[in-house]
Amino acid sequence: MEWRLLGKSGFKVPVLSFGTVTFGGKTDEFGATDVAEATRLVDICLDAGLCMFDSADVYAKGASEEILGQAIKGRRDKVIISTKATFRFGTGPNDVGSSRHHLLQAVEGSLRRLGTDYIDLFQLHAFDGATPIEETLRTLDDLVRAGKIRYLGCSNFSGWHLMKSLAIADQHGWARYVAHQAYYSLVGRDYEWELMPLGLDQNVGCVVWSPLGWGRLTGKLRRNQPKPDASRLNSQRVVEIGPQIPDEYLFKVVDALDVVAHETGKTIPQIALNWLLRRPTVATIIIGARNEDQLRQNLGAVGWQLSPEHVALLDAASQTPRTYPYWHQSGFKERNPFPTN
Image 1: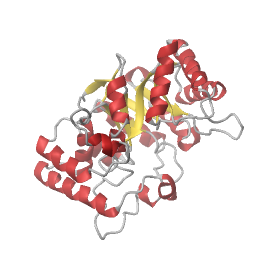
Image 2 (image 1 turned 120 degrees about the horizontal axis):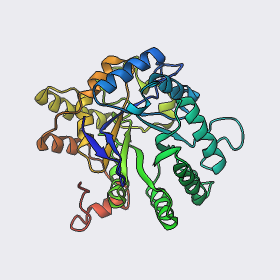
Image 3 (image 1 turned 90 degrees about the horizontal axis):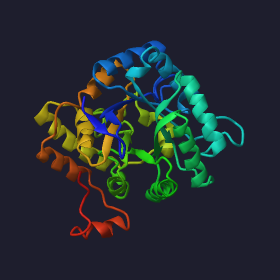
């Protein structure tokens, strides 16, 4: 397993992390992994050198963290725990957001459910525009100084959300975000327009979520064929809030993946994940799995590299028109080149 520094820190993380959104679920939207199966999946991950596990308080209403805590019991020193908070977790008026009240409550709850006294990487799950950024960052800094959090990250921030937060943290000498957990995939490349250049400039590592485009790059979606029964794309939640991708664009990317799969002998998910590992700022990719077979297949994304020709083929197939001002900036390549490591 390859390891990379997490943004502007001395902390290294494996290039693959395991997402626990399936732990404790009660429906088939993401999965319904119990303690026994979760423990088996953790065992497989650790055997492969994958020791970073990502969760959130809202996953299965806290059950995900509880099951992860039980699955790693007795081997806390062998794992890296990443979790998140900000979304509503309770019915009270203060049970939501990134206020001091809610963050202190959220961290204590996560520590209790995970059965640990510290969180390696704690991330805000979303930007809270109702709470002063200074209040949020001071609270997070206090938690770092108290030893309850070791490194800070955010998730789903816009460029100005992240840059303003970094500037305020630097102004006051508070702990800054070293990671940004962001949606990024071959069929979702908006991250490259502003957040990737920002990540390079400010040394913020990307923790990639949904690297297979909300289940679109599993190799099971084909032209003129129905979606498989077990697919996240059958979820009403995905229809309502997930990224909508035109069929023809998706199948153009899948066609290119098929070519690379034929020439490399790798699976479509393995190729899609390996492509991400070559992108600037990417520190780790969160992979998920409903079962052992899916996990082992995803673990096969490391230990090899796509050729420059295959990368160019996938880049061309997945390129989309940019919104303003990014299309204008892309026309000034002499001074605005594509980010490189």
